[in-house]
Image (tube, rainbow, N blue to C red):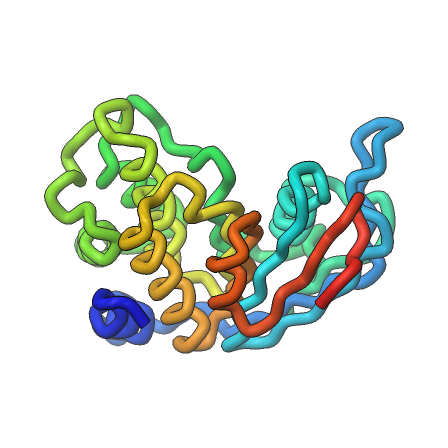
Length: 237
């Protein structure tokens, strides 16, 4: 582990909700069974199956266009399934509780008119967290990714790597049973990549399912299981 490991493991094990005595969301799992995704006449995924349980850290690899993002979005319920089913432990995605999943999207998905802190805070308040708890959790998450001094900056004032870390902080702060991360280290230097991977590992060690799409073999090597996609099919793992 890198020099940030102990700090990040502490953050991963002890969420604000646990510290304040409030209940965490129930542990989830991920079962993907024969999933297909199509965009018009283009097949993005075909007969993809995988399984993950609490504490598992999975990496999904493959060349550009292999279907990594489509798989993340299918698990999250963002895209409709052409076939198959995704079960997150509390019903298939079509009926799922949105609190079951946190997603760190490719491209970060931050609101440019908000500060980094506001981007992390907003989904917490939307999920019903009390103002004080949401504020504490957002502050802790930004500190964990090394943005403790940059939370008041507008997103457009941040570098690409800082924006990516803000998106990671937002996903971590949500503290869902399933964390989906789409290329969460693509804009990061070595030290910050290790910082984020330590945080992903800490979330898994705390009992979450973590599924990370990545083209980086060194990042994938940090996972427990590596699933390789090629042209929308599982070819390794």
